[in-house]
Length: 255
Ligand code: ADP
Image (cartoon, rainbow, N blue to C red; front, side, top):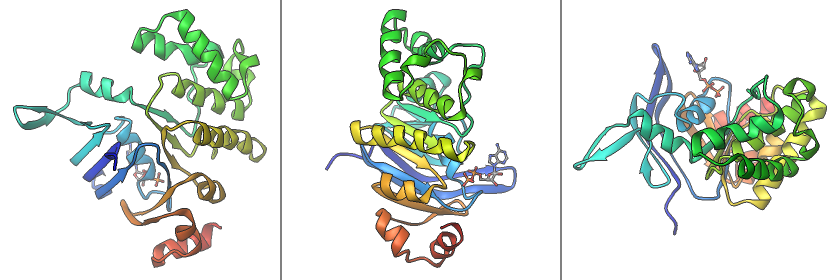
């Protein structure tokens, strides 16, 4: 049995006096596709941002790819990680946000190549070759020279996916990546994610309100409520036969 690629152990996180995550633990196996569902404010985005080191934790531990994320081990002791450690760990993880966050004054090609060139020292020619492969994969090879303002929301989001993939992360996090899109643009982005799930062995965590997609995409579904995982299981178990009353009432409202 392989070791989990993500191990979250009893983490807590508050914003002011509001406890967003309350002793949350979870494990993710390499290559697993996970959907995080649950009511707004239940902490789903926060756990993704914590994994991406965009938020600090107040307590608990996280291991990613066999190493502590927020701590470093010295002489048998766990000490808080410094920025260098966080930056190195961050390279294992890619994230796509609800709002694409492309660099508005850079063309599509530059958006995809900048991070590999700046953070990994990849040469321009190699970065551009890889970027073209990725843009081809998301169906946008012909938009390499376009500026973000010339793209539709769905196209921007596909560039954002290519940009995150350009750093060759082992883990990809998707935070409600279709919820800011016009309905007719949702499918093209979901198609790219289907393709990624089918063609790569990347570990993928997805926060979504698209229950149909979550059902088809995920190996396992986690239902969050008030900063805890209330129920988890295979998509069929969670969507067809939820055991917990809170999962049942959430699904009744949303489906
Ligand atoms: P979900 O993704 O399940 O909707 P979130 O993780 O986004 O939930 O947020 C959980 C709660 O934490 C929300 O009530 C949100 O308002 C609050 N929250 C999130 N980020 C911050 C922040 N940076 N400062 C203050 N409150 C925040």
